Image (cartoon, rainbow, N blue to C red):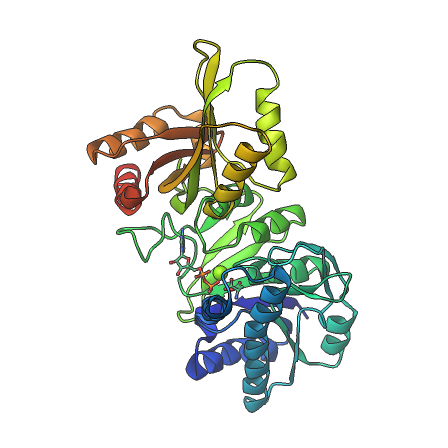
Length: 399
Ligand code: ADP
Ligand code: ASP
Ligand code: MG
């Protein structure tokens, strides 16, 4: 008997019909003789709606209360799915994240899993029940509810698969797998049969929301092979694994965009030792995650330092750089986006970057910053050109 973890995202459980669709998939897996743990997200746009509800009350809610609020979404889905499974004659029990044993650190709204106590899930499986677990949720040392960050149900599923040494971890969603770009927004995308953890981690971190990046990080750490597939169309999906078979020899696996980008500029910084440490040490202390950093060459004893971070962190960055580090010319702008290409094959091939730049040039799109690693190239461009840029780069590299 195999143990299978199946995760269903919000669109897969958005209404009665979709819940019964999921229940049929789960019941079929169970009837084939498998133990099944199911992880579900909140229905449809519930999490977004809850965030809006909070905004009706305050623009500055406490993170603890946000977690208390957001965790309710998943609780609705688990109970409804457990009921639907019983209707189909399949024994099931729903468990919240904390009942399922998710212990986290205290970072409300972006908590990290510190431990997963699997006794309850295991004992329910022994009682021949399908266990339906609320994704996205945990509990910290103070017995407060925490959530794992947007898209965190993927991480819950991978954590359960890792802790229980599951034979399979299936991530069901509303597209048929991982594509060369968002298939809802870009023409002529191709579904990938397989992709490596490293490439998927980059794609997810650079904006391809089909998998949450922390879930891929965890899958790589514990070597949990993932299968991304559609809950609506039973066709083979994409395997995410340590070493992907690359039958087609694709140099590039995908194009992604991230519009949550702010560019912070500090002008006329003294050109002397210790300045970068002063700036980025301070930002690190404030838990601000910096992405791309540019520094101009010094002239007249001064230089400019420019970096990107998320829009949500930009105001705090400007404030601490002005008030604590006493830089006078600091500003932030959110009019930017990051477009990226990812592929392990580019390490050993020349001309890939040139292809990306040519596509942007042909579309008359200006590049403000560039960053590269062995398996990705990112360009910061104007936000209103992001979709056009992704389409142009995809056309150029996948024609
Ligand atoms: P779920 O609710 O199942 O967690 P998400 O909305 O979080 O689903 O993620 C699925 C969506 O990710 C798809 O509907 C698709 O629009 C988007 N997406 C972005 N990039 C990609 C990609 N490269 N491959 C597949 N889907 C992608
Ligand atoms: N419901 C949460 C969200 O919308 C978690 C998830 O869907 O994975 O982000
Ligand atoms: Mg998701």
